[in-house]
Each structure stands twice: as C-alpha cells, then as structure tokens.
Length: 153
Figure 1 (cartoon, rainbow, N blue to C red):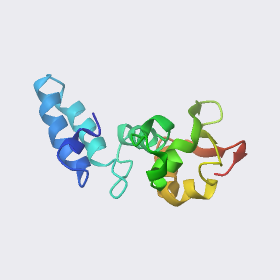
Figure 2 (cartoon, rainbow, N blue to C red):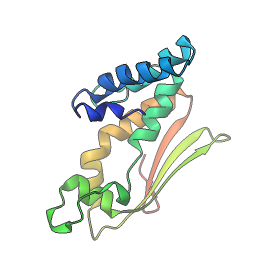
Figure 3 (cartoon, rainbow, N blue to C red):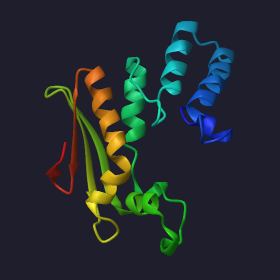
Figure 4 (cartoon, rainbow, N blue to C red):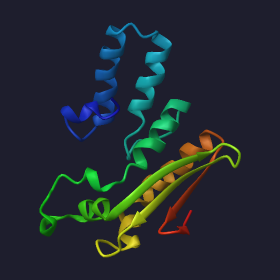
C-alpha cells in the first residue's frame, strides 16, 4: 500500500499515496488514530523526505529501503540495463534479519560482481542505507549491512 501513489506519479508518490490510503483505510472502518499512524508513515517514506516519525514509519523505511533483488528488474534486455537494473540484477540473495538479543537489523546481500561492483551498490543506495540507520535507531536498534560476507556498516 505504501507505493500506491505511484499510480498518480513517481514524483511525490508518498504524499499522494498517503491521501489515497486515507480514503481506503477510512472506508474500511479503521480507527482514526490508526489511520493517522499509517498515512503518516506512508507520507514519510520517500527517499527525499523520509523520516522515522513513528514506529510504523521506521519499519516501513527499513522494509522499503532494503528491498533490492533481481526480480525488481522489469527490463529483460540486459544490454539496455541502467545502473539501477544492473545493481538489482546483480543481487543474487537478499535477507533482512532482526536479532532482538543483539538489537540489530541486518541487510545481508550476495552481489554477483560480474554484473556490478559493490561500489555501484553504494552509488545508488548509500542514502537509503543511511535512512535505514536512522529508522533502526528510532526503534532502538543498530543497522548493519553485509555484502558478500563483509560487514560494511
């Protein structure tokens, strides 16, 4: 539901999505306080405006910004891949693990470096990883990033 605003436009999709979600959740009979929490989270998840204003927003940011995987690539012509296609296509494994005892949330990736360098991942995802760190901190957790067996954050 958090990306429903993309049906209107990718630009400002978080805000339009929050408005659309409000109508849907209200019509479903959700309690107003719960609706407010959900739409606030949706409205604060876009890369440019993301901020963990509540626990739902923090969880949404973590889930959304760690979503990197081969199946995200719709372009089947590998000769026409842009950097986003190459990076997502290169990810052979992606796991998010919550360790409640250690109070960590870890994104573990296996990247096929024949498709892209690990540096390419950081070129497009560093900002998202910093958002994940802020979101994890809101939840009193530490965010870790492991790529190809190496802990990088």
